[in-house]
View 1 (spheres, rainbow, N blue to C red):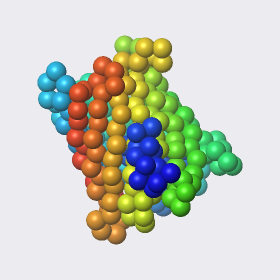
View 2: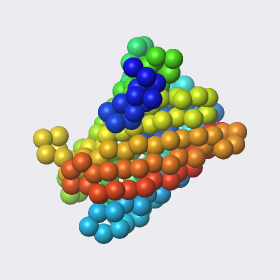
View 3: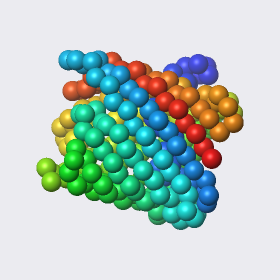
View 4: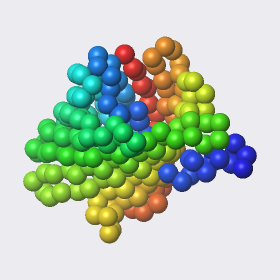
Length: 212
C-alpha cells in the first residue's frame, strides 16, 4: 500500500484540535487554540471557539472552553481532566461546568486514545465522548479522531463527529485538517468539513494553536 493511499485512507476513515483528551498536559505545560469555522448549509453561518488547557500536576489538567457551537449556542465552560489509565490505552475523565446558551450546564466526558504506527509513520487515535446536560435535557457528542504525524511539525487529522442520541444522531460530520508549525510552539490549522447527516453541506475551518 503506497504512503499516499495510506494517508488518504486515514483521513477519510476517521480534524480536530490538539486538546489533551486522553493525554493530560505535563505539569506546568499549557495549550491555547482559537478556531473559526464558516459553514454552508441552508444558510451561511460562522462560529468560533477559544480553548485553553494547563497542567497543574501529572494527574490534573484544567481548562476553559468558550465560544459558540454549530447551533449558535454560546458556551463558557471550565473543566478538569483526570487520568483513569496510562497503561496501554490512555483513558481520562473530564468534568466541565458553566453556561450554555445563557443557562447552567455540566458536561461530563470520557476520552480514550492510543498511539499507533502506520508503516514508517506515527500517529494516534482517540474517541472523546461527552454528555451535555442542561435544563432542556441531555445531548451526547462523540468525536472519533485519527491523526498522523507527517513529519516533525506537520500533522494530518481526520475526525468523525456525531451529536444527539446514538440511535438517531442529530448530525454526523466528517472533517479533515492539516496542521503545520509556523514558529516555535505555534501551529496553524486549515481544514474542510462536510455533513453526512443533518449537517452543513460544506465548511471551512481555520485555527491557531500555541503551546507553552
